[in-house]
Amino acid sequence: MPTSEPFVTSRTQIAGAPVRDLADRFGTPVYVYNAAKIVERVNDLAQFDVIRYAQKACSNIAILDLVRRHGVVVDAVSAGEVHRALAAGYKVARGQEPGTGSQELGRAEIVYTADIFDRESLDLVVKLGLPVNCGSPEMIDQLGERAPGRQITLRINPGFGHGHSQKTNTGGEQSKHGIWHEQLDDCLARADRHGLAVTGIHMHIGSGTDLHHLGQVCGALEKAAEVVGRSVTTISAGGGLPIPYRTGQAFVDVDQYFQLWDAARKRLEAKFDHQITLEIEPGRYLVAESGYLIAEIRAVKQMGGNTFYLLDAGFNSLARPILYGAYHPMSVCPRARGATAGLPSSADGPLHDVVVGGPLCESGDIFTQEEGGFVAKRSLPAAAVGDYLIIERAGAYGFVMASNYNSKPLPPEVLIQNGQAQLIRARQTADDLIRGEVIPK
Image 1 (tube, rainbow, N blue to C red):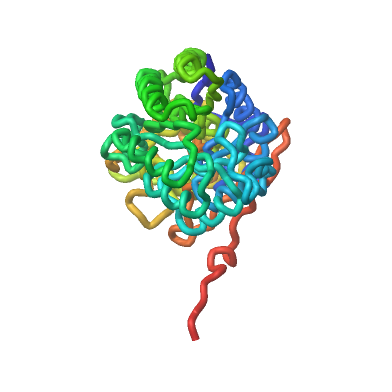
Image 2 (image 1 turned 90 degrees about the horizontal axis):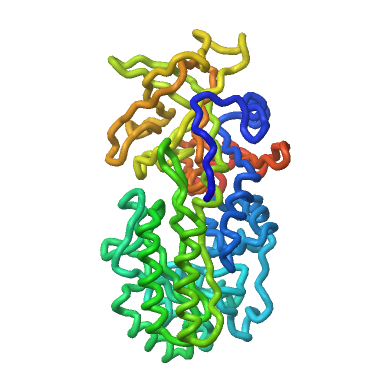
């Protein structure tokens, strides 16, 4: 079973690289990723036949290249993610070329998974012959009209869901995701009309779920596969594997989880009398722990009974707290002695309850908040202006959800491999902010 590194409130290095050196070299705010942690999580899932990375979690092409070199394939939820995968070295496999019919999901390096086709995505899928995981009945018709005879998979909404937040729950009647389980027969008829072969079934009920809820998906997917019949050659366990963000939280027992899915797979193999490929689609699980957002404390403010640490990073840099009330562990790194404005910090001293916020002209720009926008406090070392605050386990849905709100440039991204820190995305410039804008004459 995977183990988590201990939570700390004081930190001076990330993957062997000093925090101060990273801040001096790349500036703040800056995203830093530990490549070794990503590889460790990939290896956790080696029992599955196919590990398909949900690149929406962290889509820098250097991260995609890293997982590709360790045998991981990808899904894409947009035309842009298809282009990213190609730029990172993923191939359109033999048998996927236009005019030859697309490959089944289990053998493809890139699969398009979504609830709709926008026009650009449909054109690209048809052009490249990419296999499609359909999340709406209309996708079956739209693909069938343009590319009859292809193989497709279906993402089924089993009628229930679960997640760490209602906003990450991707199953049940309140969710827009997937094909409603009661519409499966209709979707098979649509596929038949267009000569599309349904070769796989996919289910995903939410992000951050527990083993009990994840295990329920096995039975629901098995029933759906039985309805589809012998054409099924691939089943996907989807994603949603949680990682611990707080003390007391634990990983799902991956061995036990695999055994649940392997048993379902074997029952289907016995019914269909052929082999079934078992796929898993992790996003957060592979990258969340690897990521750190280093920010500089630019103000320490007393507001009545609250002490605020205000950073040069805001929800423009990391949106999960304001979107979900998401909790991230935090730590403080004191700046080198003599370089701090104001009182010296005492990162090794007693902890103090503080509110951590950002620079944006927005009251919701608070990193220590609960779902619903309620401001919370965090116990952290005393700090001063110039010290660094590190928001940890920020590798999933961090940079990818960043914005230019308040005309703030997107931060750089840095990858640490074998102790060496390398820039994998440059910080945006002022010119980048207005690129493409035009004042009409």
